[in-house]
Length: 506
Image (tube, rainbow, N blue to C red; front, side, top):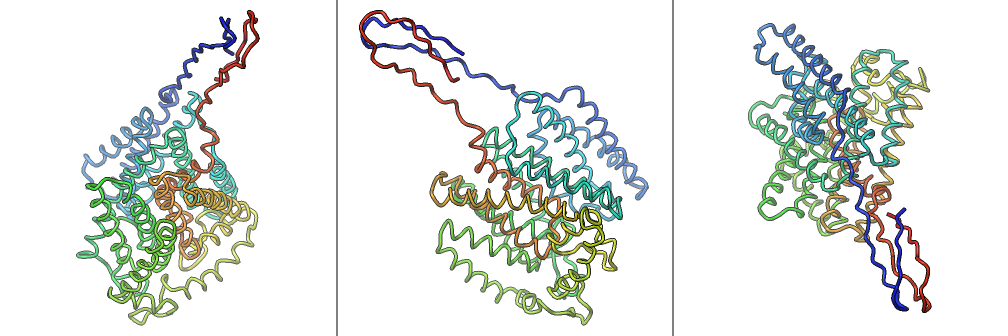
């Protein structure tokens, strides 16, 4: 409480107010003594990875072994003292690691090492932020993510294959923790959104270059029996690569009008290249989902673009070799070489859903275990339906947790859409917000036919769109500028009035 005394010389009271200085927030959370555990964890992870490299490939150069440990420790230290740098570096390099030596080193592939470091560093960062007073209240979508993870924990306890479920739970933990960290960054300063998008843009470089090299030089025949040469970039499968491309291209398109003339050419070129690579994946589900997202974006930004997009889609289908055949054999049961299709026809998917759906009744409460469906079938494949996978592997608990996240995300998207429609947001924020909604819708459309639930890398980048919509929907209610107090007084009668006490709300 602040007390002010006034003794006006006339009937008109003049009040001189000296507002209190705003409370200074701590410049940033300090890691504290617990940081030693993170550094030790980074050393252990790096050593384990180095030993794995050495056991599988005895001729591995020592510089690679030592570099693995050193890189893990440096990243951990960066994360402890400059977490935003760690997060931006992670977003910039993660797409380059997804398929790097994936089949040779099992659990200790580079993407897994980075995921473990992300869990350790982000968890300590969030704890330090809370203790230092730099914590912003979690949005309902953030609580939904936390509930999503908690409701899948019983599925790990009752899993029919805990070894498989363990890796999936680590991936899920990294998704939830990174979402909370990104949400805190955006709640603290909305301008951090552009840093996150820029880091994600840098992360597109390796997948794009790899995709081009595969398309022109090293592409391989699709093992699914389509008879086409499909590319997967730096990812483990063409479908996951296509899912990644579908939403990053949509977000890139939304950014184009917000940058200056010199940057427009670069961003536009990236969007066109991403669209070309998306076609070259021959992933029909991603094509359809991208078209849905593009139409949604066009309807909000410029309705004339809807016609242009539809005409362009038909032109591509007619002009690009393989696209028409890929669409025409959607329900085919045999491949181009006469063999049986294994994973790329709608008919195969429906048959596989019928095969794995009864697994739900084995444990309807907590499920058979996260990522454990593939251990029960001859095909050794996930259900190719994220909703079905959530309920089979997580039971009613996990399935409801998944729906909880989607429900709050849908609400946030709808509220943001209304703000964009009513011009509540400025042009720059409106464009990016519509792009985020379109990107999320694009991926949501693939939940029915693709294995998106455990596609960790896709969720890491979708977290930016999720957090952005959540902050626009609920963040303003949590971060409000201090209200300037009204110190004007009514006219007083003549004479010397007693001193007035005015309580400052600051």
